[in-house]
Length: 500
Image (cartoon, rainbow, N blue to C red; front, top):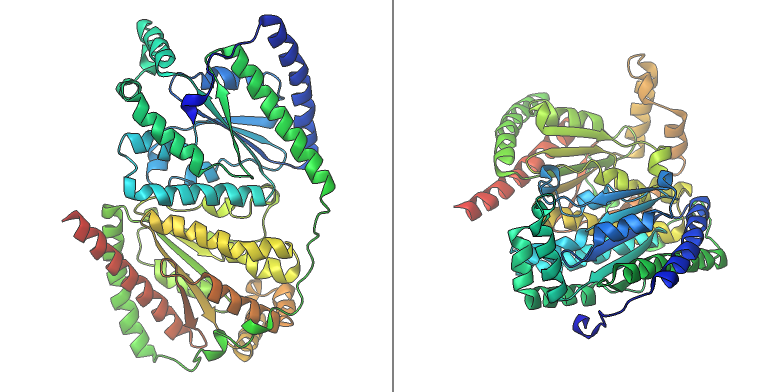
């Protein structure tokens, strides 16, 4: 495909000046309209080494209000990024509504340069493509415009530019041994690049090939491409009648009386059994935590459950003997103003652990298919597609090597009422109970059916749900600890086996 592109295209100075000026004014106006409409925009610059990405980004942004965009340069030497799934650094940089994020190289590095260099193994390439497609689909479904530009130059032109850079002391550092290797094996890298373009060309995030031999022609085509796409997206959205969030009625009948109705809530432990098991499991967990750090295994633990279900108590017993430098508890409440203008998963990606660390979420991304669904804080289309989006996010974490466990702390309605009253009568615990907690009880049946559907749709082999019988707090705390210990022992044995 790429070898058929006419790389001799040029533009005269007068035409270039006229087009850039006209399109520049238009781009500035479109940026303001996107801001007013709350449309986030991502512009991706990819291409061959020395194709001029930096030059072209600079020319594009001259027409933009600098208060409304950011440029993110992918840094392969970033230690934080290397210790996390490769999409983490890009999820955390996705723009808020109304802003533009420009990526100088992007998530495509993993299936081009890293693949060529052997960092991304061939067996992992199909999964990487799937992760990329999922990432872009989730963002575009949420309203983000993704414009992908690939700057193309020939082998000879690349070699000429490398030599020019290499000849000057001030720019020689920009040309690496790997750059020269990719030029020498240009045809191999070209094939990898063509495969990438073919596998990631989609209706919602298409590629535009930029003939980059003549820098003026490239700049003109880039600016025109961006303005045309933004104008199209603004016009298209004006024609769409937005679906307004509505409080959900009774959830689907087929999920009524499902998973939760079969839970045996009579399970319990004596105080003596509890103390013995608690001490044994906490000591094991303390040792396992050190091994997790040594082997750089990340752990994600999500806690959901009924109000007063015992999440806080379970988390407290889980962390009591852990090194506080190696874990983080993330309490999740209603999204704040900054979180609301991002994709709903953005705030959780920001708190995902790096290798060797544990992230504990006290309430999670599953709010999308529970409280947001029931209370009408998102549309039906949004919560219905969230099941797949969540599975994809957890799959990405698991493929990176993370242990992902999700706990639903289950109690019955009578036990919840007893705990609510106990809290109200105890001055030291009154802060734990709110009017909202009592209101939520009135929708118990709706929430139970939504939870049943959530458990069925999102319990996977790589990120299972564990329903914890919680009427007896002692039993619940021990079950959580034992589940975590068992999962960590299994993962550590698996990783250690691969090392030996």
